[in-house]
Image (cartoon, rainbow, N blue to C red):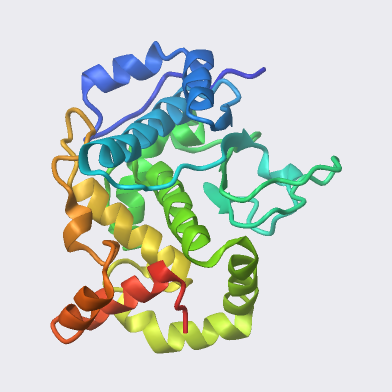
Length: 279
């Protein structure tokens, strides 16, 4: 098993204490902690991804425990060589598998829904000789500078995928698994996405350009921004229940009627995406 280099090239955002924790991280122990929460995990020895994923899990657990929320967990978190997967975006940093899918080219294996994959970037080299994930903070800065992501905080590329799982859990609870698969089939074909971008692109690009890709990315980008803005940057834990004043709060029929006129168009649009109304 290849152990990811820990000669990290971090910039602002990661404290010296965090860097020390990453260098000394016990990946096997972190994987067991995920399993104790009902989540399979294999980080392929990558200390950075294991540690950052654990912080994301703690953020979601803290929100649920402190504020009585029911934000969902992923079913699994895996580091994988994307060149071996049946996907088009082999250079992506990560993705969430939304529906049971045969992703492995060489195995007769069905990957369940709500499964996160992060790219091992095996065989890739980057400036300064560092491995890809060793420069996670710089990558977050670059993505934000390009307006590709909604925040420059180093956890964003990891938290983004966990928040896809949070969104999917909400859709499963609201629609059920079969209706969710149908929703994906109706929403993601290229012609439908072209129509989506023509209708919502300009508005969603105010969050970041990636938010205008699909309704699912819009929610993940916006929810990531809201979550990170609410974090204590030292403890990496939420400071308040920002969900209650966001498009992602639960609404009774009476509250829906009451807020409809006062709710801004972007907020109402994100709430619709959150609830599975993608048109």
